[in-house]
Length: 307
Image (tube, rainbow, N blue to C red; front, side):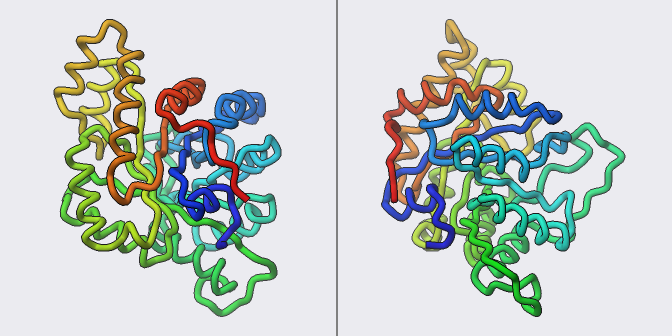
C-alpha cells in the first residue's frame, strides 16, 4: 500500500469508489465543517477538501482536512500551485502527513482574477504535473525535490490529479492524463461530465493508451439545480460543455432541482458501465445535504468497509 488510506483500499479491493467535496468556511467557523461532514459521513469513501477554490479566501485545506480527520471522515487534501512555491508545498506536506492526512489532489488552481483578491500574485513555481512528481519523490524516494536531502519520516500520500476531457485541444487531453500517470499520479478525478459522448470518446483514448490499467479514473458528476444554472455554466465556466438537449430538459421540467437529481443518477449509472471508470466524484456545490439521497438512489450504498 502506498498510503493505506481508505480510498486506496477501496480501489485495491476492486470496489467502485465514491468521493465528494467539502468547501471550507470563509473564516474559522468550525461548525460549517461539522455540518458538511455530518451530511457526508457514511455516504462516500473520502471527501475532497478544496484549496481556496476559484481563488476565494477560505480556511486552509490542511487545517480543514485535519479537522475532518478528527471528525471521523477521510479527507483528500487539495493543493494548488497558484499560491505556494516548492519550499512551502514540501513544508506543508510534512505538516499534512503529520496530522494524519493520507490523500492529496495536485492542482494548478484557478487564476487569482476569478477570486476576491484580484491584486494578489500567482506563484506557479511548479505546475500540477511537477507537483505530482514531487509528492511521489517524497513518498517513494524519501527525499526532497531534487533528491539531495533525506526526509525525516514517511510521506505516505495516495496521489490524485484532475483531468478535463472537455477542454481544447481535445486530442491532447488524454495525453496530458498519460503524462500525469507517468509523473506518479494514482487516481484522477475528471471535470463535471454533461457531454457523455465526448467523455466516452476521451475514455476510449485513455484505454488506447493503457492509462486505465495504471491509474484509477473517477468520473466527475455535478447535479444541476436549475435550467438557469445549466445555462450559466454552459456560457461562463471554462472547460464545461452542456448539450442544448440537457438544458432544454431542465427548462421543461416541473421542478428543476428534481430533474437535476434524476439526470445525475442517470449519469452515474451510465459511467459505471464504461470500461476503465473506477469511481465517481460527486461535486454537489453547496448541496452537500443531497449526497445521501444521490448515493442511495444510484445504488452506491452501503459503502464498503475495507481493511
